[in-house]
Length: 380
Image 1 (spheres, rainbow, N blue to C red):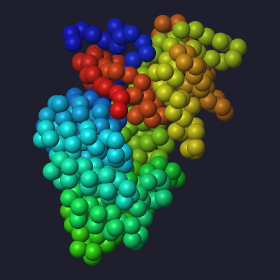
Image 2: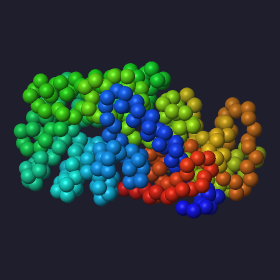
Image 3: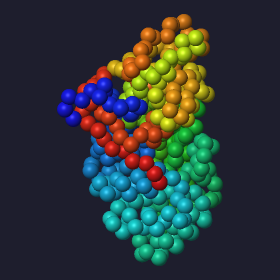
Image 4: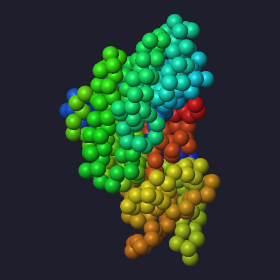
């Protein structure tokens, strides 16, 4: 793109600061390298081959995805080492088999005997041993088998004896998003590691294979101090970061690489409001910071170069209108922004905000220039 600046863009739109993104990527890779464990980046946030190519160790992967649409899109671009890290619905096994028949090493996740039987049946029918990771519940957050539960071995045996391929176990410490400080995150990281290793040992004691021991969340990946027994780490939102991660002290506002560019369209001066053309259709409904120490509304407001205005937040949204206001208790004055001025909004949750847009407008620093447009996709 030649001589394009953010002033040339139609608002609202999604901006991606590539320099910040690459700094974030280098930070986590360096940390994991020091702990001797490779990264399997989660592409659910990015949903873009242009971003993926800047994260992967090679053109073929490895990667993690959260939808089969992601697996199909990245496979079409030559990515072949893919973990679909959401519990499989049996009706989706035809799509799994189709990708594998095309040479994609797609592995899937289960946590029940019903799923194990369905995968074994499909493996038998196709003559292809579908590789499976059993999901472990390491924190009571969501799905998975608890460490020590006999169900773990029963699932493993059903897979192993009936023609599927037991590749290992995986867990996601999603409850790390609820930690109050980095010390608690570090404890959660060790809890995650210990649970995963214990389950791998449980399978091994039963004579079952467990070559892959996979863990990961963005908070625990950044604060783990020991990854003994772990073969890979998965993380996704670290690429862009967001206000939830900043609220956990995993990053600072200066690390957030994703923002929504929006135009001032009016004022309600008696109410202390500035109106912009980015509502929840541009920002999403995510209010992930509401339960943190600092509630950031629907996002932190920055000037056009990406510098925060202090206590100015997007306090309310309608479908296509956003309301900017000073947070309660702020002593600073509302900035003097005229109709047509551009501002940027840091999102609560990069995954949710990104999902509202079909492309990234890539900048390198500050307010431009815009150096590229990278498509992103959606769907399941």
